[in-house]
Length: 325
Ligand SMILES: [Mn+2]
Image (cartoon, rainbow, N blue to C red; front, side):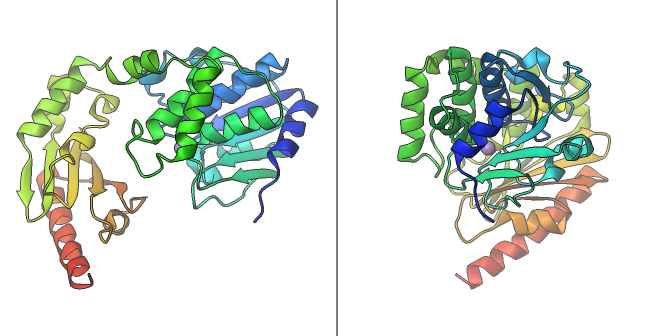
C-alpha cells in the first residue's frame, strides 16, 4: 500500500470540475476542518463542491464558513469523491454507497489503520491531524488559501492534538500552526468558539458527572442517567467531552464515563492513562472499538447492571496488565 504524491492528487483536483467531499460520522474538529478547508480551497479554484457528513451534525462547529452547506448542496453529479480523516469507507455509515458510486476517489487521512480504499491515497500516520496534510497538499499543489480556510484547518489541528496536549503535539504540529497563522488563522477566536461557548446543559452535566465520581481500585468512573438528560433537555452532543474532566484525576489508571443518552442506551467512554493498559481491549468485549488510550462502546440495558458488568471486566483486565508488567 503506497501513497501517491500530494502533487499527483493536486493534479487530479485541477483536472476535474466537481467534487463531493465526505468525512466520518460523529464529526470532530478534524473532520469539519479538513472537509470545509479543502472544499473552500477547491471553490476558490473555480470548482463545484458538495459536502457530505453522516447526520446528526454537531452544532459546535457551526461557526466555520460553509458549515450551512453541508448536506445542503444537491448536484445531480460530481466527478470525484473525496473521503477525509477516515480509515475506511465504513466510517461514513449510510453515505458509503454514495461514495462508492464515484469512478475516481481520493483518500486523505492520518489513521494508522487506513486501508487505502480509494483511487488516489495519501495516509500519513505521523501527521498530527488530517488538516495538516490538507495544508501540505495546498502548498505542494499551490492551491488557494485564505483566512477562512486557515481557520478551518487550524480547528482540526487544535482539536486533534487536544489543544497541543497529546503525544502528536510534534514540531510539525507547531510548524503547521505557524503557517496557518501566517495564512490568516486566528487562534484566539477559534479557541473561544470551541472552548468558551458551552451550552448550559453541558455545564450542568459536568457538575452531575463530577459530583458522582467514584473510585474502584485505580479506575475512576462516573455516570449520567437518562433522567438527568431529560431534566436538562440535553442532547447527546451536550454530554460530549465530559470524560476528559473525569480522567484528570491524578491517581487513576483508567477513567470510564457511562452516559444513558436514551432510555436504556448507554454510551461508555473509556480512557487509559497508562501505557500497558489498552482500553480498546475492554471496549471490543462490548462490541465497541477505538484506540489503546481512548475507546468507546454502547450497551443496551439497565444502567447500573451495565456499569457493574463493565467495571468488573475492566478490573480483571487491569489486574492482568499488572501481572504482565
Ligand atoms: Mn483526525
